[in-house]
Image (cartoon, rainbow, N blue to C red):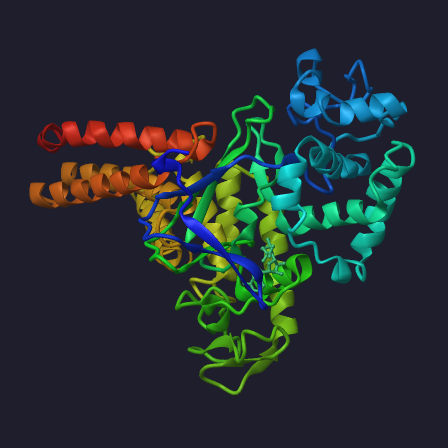
Length: 502
Ligand SMILES: C[S@@+](CC[C@H](N)C(=O)[O-])C[C@H]1O[C@@H](n2cnc3c(N)ncnc32)[C@H](O)[C@@H]1O
């Protein structure tokens, strides 16, 4: 291992979280802490039908010539991830894929695939299994009391030990592997857009914090061999030697009540991090609602670490409770889910309509307004009829306003080198630049003000390029990072000329 690749963390342990990691030296934002290959990867639970080679969506008409499970092509059936794993098991046991009516719906036959790949990896790499994976958290005792246990018994344990003839793996071991995946696996996106789960034993040691100081990026080169899906783990912010390293297991734009519910249900712990403990979520007000009974009040939790506690207005006597607030958030989330598949003009209009609908219900920086802002920032400037050159000044100003408000929240909950900050900064630079030019051409600002605004755009673009430069080129963010770097270089070289010719 070269000095550059020396891992920059150590593992410690306590009664509250089990194993956790701390920085073994001072870290700068964006600094590589370690990189790692997955022990195994494969389809997520509750997945639709996908190629067992490249993971692309399939219609299930093409089947592997050896095992008769769905693949795209002969090339895909020979990809190591399939050929060296389940293909041999299914072919030997003569377990065929049962045809399905709608391949885009959840297909339970895929539940066994990733646990099976982990089980086979225990035999291919027993040393890594013993030293890194077997010791991972599985929460079997708590999972035993949940419906997931019986679900796994039927769809994974009984299926593998029965029809697949894999009695050599005990029931206990298979349940433990299912638990290890449920508690520890990370999501990854393939080049075709499919979501997979990957098991990274070192990355998974990091404890959760709702404001993480570590950032990871998975490089899926599309080879689907044992060298693919390498993860690069970097510090997001300045981290001092001895400070704990945290990743985030939840979606950072959710409000506290929703994040804590998710962590309790799926990771079996109650988060007590500084963001969860603060009624205002570090001043962002992501969980705050507007009072419907008075003009100036806002409604906040009286104890954010108790999801069922009272919520009170800051100005009048109005009170409600966490259960009622949770229902309001579920209704807003359902509305947002309903427009998720809409893009272009239709997507913009649908989201702006939700923005207007909920403006009087929640605080301006509430999580759901922030989620809508993050989609709108992307759609304005990147949709048909709404490209950045098409946007009238009013909509350029709207894009800038949305991005600035989003950045105010992200600075608190996703500080430093985070993908969403990099992308938002990238989206912000072009409207600043174009608007400045329009305003100068309309005599609304003088040359000095033009130059100032262009410098701001250049600075914003430079920051975006700096944050996104570490993203793998196999990802959309990596490609935007490359564009940002090139645009930043061009703008720097031609700055004076552009001011002159504006
Ligand atoms: C992905 S594992 C992390 C590694 C684990 N601590 C170990 O020893 O293998 C996730 C589990 O760690 C514990 N954990 C992680 N972050 C925590 C936190 N902020 N508070 C309490 N428990 C936490 C929980 O038991 C959780 O289910």
